Image (tube, rainbow, N blue to C red):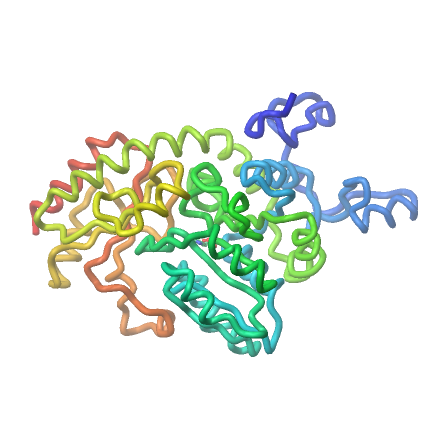
Length: 388
Ligand SMILES: *Cc1c(COP(=O)(O)O)cnc(C)c1O
């Protein structure tokens, strides 16, 4: 009989007194009394841990569960989503090579590609990922990598993973996708031939806004390659305590995703009827333009959308955000509580931080729907809309 991923997989309870919850192996070292034992642990033989920047038993439980949920052979966990993204990209491309990325991936990713990769002589083409021809047209002799995020951040543009992975494979190009939006519950890109799947575990996987982490899921071959190089040598290792929190988060991932799949569309359909709202960008909204891709790739609606207010007045936009009393503003999402990220907050004359990324219009506000009662969420938005 196969093991239940959430409750059993990776958990060898007999090794730790049959404790129901795995211990936090919060140690750097593992001790050896024979040279031969140390020698074999150093190459990770027989799964014996050597050093936590490499292999930690608590983290290993988390990695096994994530790999199983993503239906990949293996996974490694890192200290943040950006650590996973940057390590995965650096593992697949070298100086003098070319990669293709969709327009407007997650802002940190966009900035990594625009601020850091060019310094290492890596050539990047950004494209609109809606048509597969746009990928084909940019492929060069030295193209090694295609970077996807479907749906992407803020505008939720999607890509046809099956078609793009076929093009990539026939040109010997590796594909990476950031699957944080959908979580492993609502989309499994490996089933469509995508090579490397990344999550910011900080978001849905942790689910309680209490830990940062990232994961890379792929074949044993690719994971071993990254493990022995970028993973150990850049050293963005996940803390065992955070691995433990993520194992706890995974226990409820499925039911959290089910809850938001029911509540978020209710909030969106309320918003779509409001005259003070110009539009709602959301894969499951009634006028989303890529309905066929949503049907093919997203099992259920997720909890994030972007609201475009029907005003260009900065003060009014800020007043709407400030007057929300339940929703607070924050960088992140994926936890228990509903949050907004107003794009207008990124407009800051005192900072050049975002200078190379394209900002969206000021009336864009990203909403994340948490686990609260739907009526409470809708009332809060209704109340704040009544004041503009
Ligand atoms: C937050 C986020 C990331 C980055 O993850 P961190 O854990 O914050 O480093 C990457 N991609 C998406 C889509 C995100 O929302």
